[in-house]
Image (cartoon, rainbow, N blue to C red; front, side):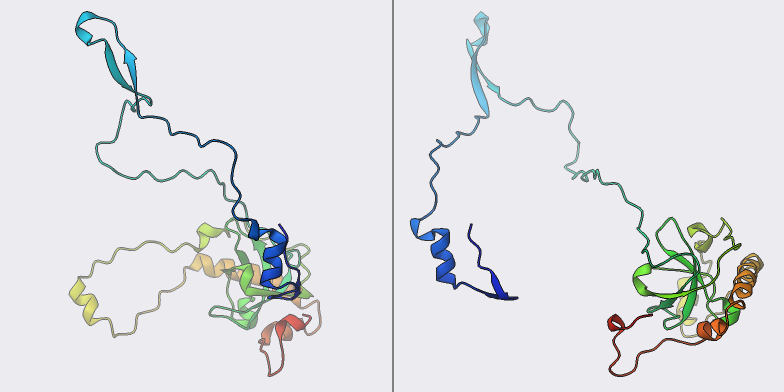
Length: 238
C-alpha cells in the first residue's frame, strides 16, 4: 500500500487524490474468488435404530457442557501476564543525589539508598541535614544528578523494605456522631515509634560521615532546587 511521505509532521508530500490513485481505489473493492463458507448447522439429522425410536433424530453438532453455573455470572478472564520488576535507570546508583520534583518534599535533594521489591526508591535527606526522613519515592518523580555520596562501607538494613512503611490498620471505636463533631478539630499527631527513630539515626550517621568527606556537599543537600524564568530542566545538566 502506497503511503505519502511527510514533508513536516502532519503534512504529506502527496495529495489525497494522488494517494488514492496510487492505492488503486478507483478499481473498487477487491472481490474474493473463494466461495463463502457456510455456517455449521446447530443440529444434524441422524438415523437411530430401534422400532420405537422413530428411525431419525435431531442431534446437536456441539455437545452441551456437563456442568453449568446456577447463576449467569460472568467469569473473570484469566491473565497469563506475569508482573516484571521495575527496571532502575542507569543514572541512579546507591549514593546518587536525587532531586524530588513532586510530593511533600518537592525541591529537596536526597540520597538514594536502594531499590525496593515494589520498584520504589528508598531515599533519605538525611533528616538531620535537610529534614527529609526515610521514605519511598517513584523514580518517575526524581531527577538524577551527577553528584554522588561515597557509599563505600555503608550497608542498608534488610528490614527497610515495603512492609516497613506499611501503616497498621486501626479500627475506630468512635461512633459516627462523635466523628462528625470532631471533623473540624485538628487531629493529634501520632508519635513515631522509637524503633523507627533509631533506624533513621543509624542510617543518617553513616551517610553524614560520608558527606563530610566532600567539601560543600552538606550545603548542596541543604539547598532546595527551583527554576527561574527561562530555565528548562530538559536543557540543563545536573
